[in-house]
Image 1 (cartoon, rainbow, N blue to C red):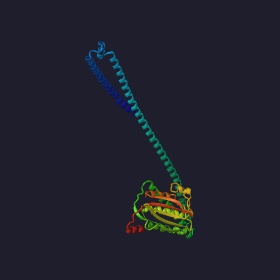
Image 2: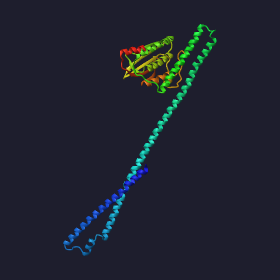
Image 3: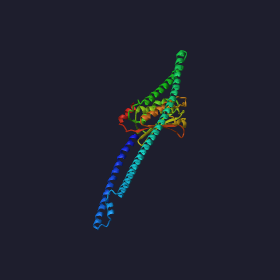
Image 4: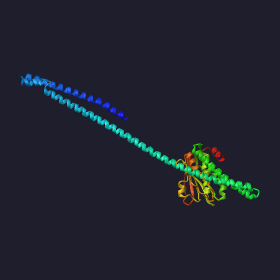
Length: 371
């Protein structure tokens, strides 16, 4: 590229030298013709005046190729040549200066682009490193959390098989209840894992519809009332009946189930869980508030990240460690958001927000409540 620009400059500069030189030669010839005409005029005037000039001087002046005229012509030609050379060199230096400025500017742009790309690549490497570390930590936790319920299930089944005849009916029911609890825990963990895997592979399809949040929350609260009674926890639905959100019913149900289940786990006996809702600036915000043991500030900052250790509930309940991660993934799919805040009097509130939906036809509301 540099050679092409240089030869282009030469191609422009050399012809310009000859053009300037020829122009100056033309100017010089015109000047000489003018001087000759003036001289002839004066010669004619002197003759008319009566030969005022001496014959020898007149002869010298009438000779166009005299010594003085030749010297004047040579000096004029040298001056013209020097002027032409000066103009050509000046033009070349200007072109060279512009060329060097262009080269430096392009090198600067290339260097800035390279630095920006390196910074971007370094950030991507850091993000990928954090993701790999989180996934490694997550798989380690997953292996540990799956091993424990599977071992309890296998040991319980083996003991029940060997001691079945010696056990009383009450002891058998105790064993079966414990095995059922472990089975549900494994099923819940696998369900969360499957949902998270679908989200990572982009396999979750959002079916948009208007959701009456009060009806949706009331159905889920009815499902969890037996578990709440065991801990003497009161479930309250304070979501306004006119609040309508735009989202996917199955995904919204999954988010609410996880948040309510999480609240039940960390709420002490005799506590309460309140669901409330509001709409502002075209968004619907649903809050799941409990007065339980709360979450530490350090844990709260990373609670939605993959691979975080989860603590046990007030009654020793164990979670899957994936519930809140799944909630974040599903809310992103529905173009919403989720956050957590500590309550002033103790406990925690999880908020998730969706786009505001249009109030559907009453018939559609009946269908949602029947589902």
